[in-house]
Length: 513
Ligand code: BG6
Image (cartoon, rainbow, N blue to C red; front, side, top):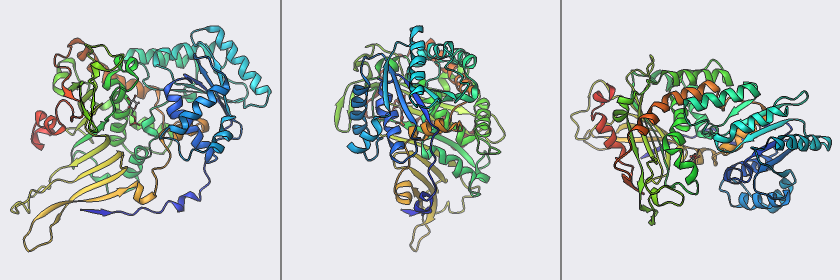
C-alpha cells in the first residue's frame, strides 16, 4: 500500500537561469582511460547541451596511447553515444561539442613532458583559449604524486592571471600513511582552496537531498538521535562483477573501493550536526566531526565487527557468471574481498549506542543503494493484543535506483477487527519531478569549474576516513581468509543482512549495546 507525497512541480524551478562554469581548459590526465569515456565526456557533453559550459571551455586530454585530436574526438564520441549517462545524444549536438576537444600524448613520469604541456597551454592561450586551467587527475592514486609535482615544477600550479585548480579522483591513497603523504605533496604544490578531491557519490541528487530532507523539514530532526533511532543500515549492493578493472580491484578490494569513501560519506551526511551555513567549510566541518567520532575498531575487534566475502561462480539475471578468482587478470588464489560489512559506533551525544551497519558487495542479488533508518518501537504496546505484529517505523532513503524516500508506518487494516498493517508514504523522483536530474559527474564538473568545493572532500576528511579503515585493512591482511569464495554470484552476500543483524544480537535491546 502506498501514499504518494506530491512534491512541487519541477516547471517552477526550471525558470531559474542555469549556472555557467568559468571559462577554462580542462586538462584530463588519463584521457584514454575508462572514466573519461564513460563518465567525464558524457557529463561535459550534457552540460554543453544545456548551456552550462562557458563558450571558452575546452578539453585537453592527456594519455599514453598515441592518437590525434581527431581520433580522440571519434573515440569519445562513440563512447558518449553508448553511455547511459549521456542525455539526448545527437550527431549535430556532438559535432558542435567535439570542436572543444584536443588530445596530447604524454608520459606523466617524464619531467620533460610538463614543459611540453606548459608550451601547449601557452600556445592555446595565444590563440584565444582561456588562461584558467582545471587539471583533472583521473589516473590511479599511485601516479597522482608525479603529476602534481610535475605541474608544480613548471609553474602550472599557480597563475599570475587566471586560476589553476586540481581535481583528484578516488581512491585518495590506499591507507592513512599514503593519504597523508599524498596530501603533503598536494599541499606543497597547490593551495587547499584549489584542490577538489572527488567522491562522485556527493554529486548524486539523492545524496545531496539527505541534507535537505534532514535540515529543511521540522518533522525529522527532532527524532534524528539516539532517543528515537534504534539502528541505521547503509547498503550499496551491485550486480556487476569486477568488470575489466581486475588490476585496480585486486589491490583495492570492496572496503577501500566503496566503504573508505562513498559509504563513509553517506554515513557522515546521515549523522552530522546541522552546519551553520550551506557552504564548503561549514558542511565539511560537520562531516569531519562525525568521522572523527567513529570508534576505531581495534585489531582484536575486527572479527566481531566486520565481515568480508568474495564471490564464487553463480547466476546473475539468469546467466551463469564466473567467480572472482576466474575473472581475467585476477590471481586464482586471490584474497581480495568483493564484499565488506562493518558495524560502526559513533561516540557522540547524538548517536552513542546507535549502531550503523554498512555493507557493500559486487555480484550480489540486487542493484541497490539505500540508507534505512530504523526507529525504536513505541514505548507502550497498546495494540499488542491484535494478531499482527507492530513494526517500528523505518525511513528509507533510496539513493538508487528508483530514487526516492519511503516512510513505513502502521495503520489499521479496514475491517471489524483491530488489525494493524505496515503502509508506506512514498516520494519518488520520477513521479514527482519526471526526471532524476543531472548525473553526479555533471554536477561535480560544473562545481569545479565554478569554484564551489562544497561537494568535495577536504584533506582532514580524507585522513579521518583512512584512520577508520586502515586498522581493518591491517587486521584483514594479517589473517588470510580461509573460506573464500564464500558467496555465490547472485546471492545476498556471505550472510544475508538479516542474519548479520542476528549474529550481532537478535533483539533491538542487544543491538543497542
Ligand atoms: C566506484 C567504484 O567509485 O563506484 C566502483 O570504484 C563502483 O567499483 C562504483 O562500481 C559505483 O558507482 P555508482 O555510481 O554506480 O553507484
